[in-house]
Amino acid sequence: MSSTVFFGSARQARLEAKETLPAKLDLIIERLGLRERVKDETVAIKMHTGNNMSYSTIHPVFVRRVVQAVKDGGGKPFVVDVNWDAAGAELRGYASETIGCPVYPAAGPDEKYFYDHARTYKSIKNFRVAGLIQDSSFMVNFSHIKGHPSCSFGGAFKNIALGCMAGETRSAMHDVMHYDQYWFPEKCPEPVDRQRMIESCPFSALVEDKHHPGQLHLHMEQCNQCGRCLKVAPAGSLKIDAVNFHSFQEAAATAADVVMSTFAPGKVTNLALATHMTPVCDCFGFTSMPVLPDAGVFGSDDIVAIDQAVLDVTGKSRLIEENLPTVMEVHTREGHPFRWLHGPLKDPYVVVAYGEKLGMGSRDYELVDVLPVEKVERSAMQYIAAH
Ligand code: SF4
Image (cartoon, rainbow, N blue to C red; front, side, top):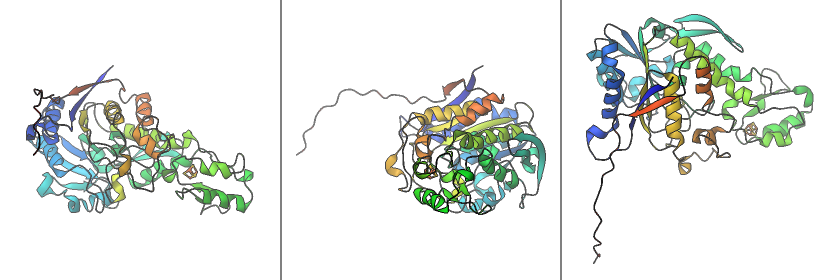
């Protein structure tokens, strides 16, 4: 069955406040019926508050509108993020005075407040859901869209999969990329061959395994699957394989499913802001130039549909290659522009496909534009010569 995704374009016809993104967010909040759904609910607004000196996360103007809508509806809102981002959130503009509600660390200041959920995905046997998430009765999953080094894209799934888990599970989700064997030491016994492989990687993705001397370790986040190392690797010693890269996204979908299972049906809604989309995650502690043009704001009760719609809309944009950090390279031009940026095996659609497989929602959706951009008609111009 098709889901509904509400959308407000970043583009305007006229230079008027009512056609800008905060006003379109208001229309989406209305269409989602947020006010009517939160009476007496304890509402966790999960967002990424950034880190250090980042400034491309969701601007407090948007957060305030969501907070106000929850208050208007009789709910008790608070913003949550992981402890190390929540700790300095006020430095980036997220304080009660600006957004209208407090910002809390989701699993407590020491990440010791969580609930265990037994669920297996490869090496992960247990998912630790942050205490304040599980204790809340309603969640607004408010994500900022950007690139990501592990999976090429951070959206609604990633916002709650990583952000609603305690630290141990976040680490396990990154480590799961190493579950399927990619390094075969018996095929590369000579140190000189290993050194040649290490030196072949321009991104320092391939290193000596500090826990297992004589073996190699692949930093999946830094690898854009360019294949340079394979050119010098002894036959069969190294695999650069989709299964490792996809594991992160499948683990993320599983984690998001666990988070959603702690809410009653209809008690989660998703908002996403696709502006100032940087190549890597908001947790890096800085903001770099946008690599895609601003797309707009999205809202849906269906987490699969909203990420699918965000990817489809942003996928039609061009990658702003002149804005890329010079350390990055584009070596594929197929699929979504985030894939161009992070490599062919980091396909951002994997997470939505896996989420749909888990029964979390539908990739089939109807995009409802809450305020279509009007085409302003003009009569023909008269040429006026300059003097
Ligand atoms: S595929 Fe490219 S980026 Fe990845 S480890 Fe090999 S050389 Fe480095």
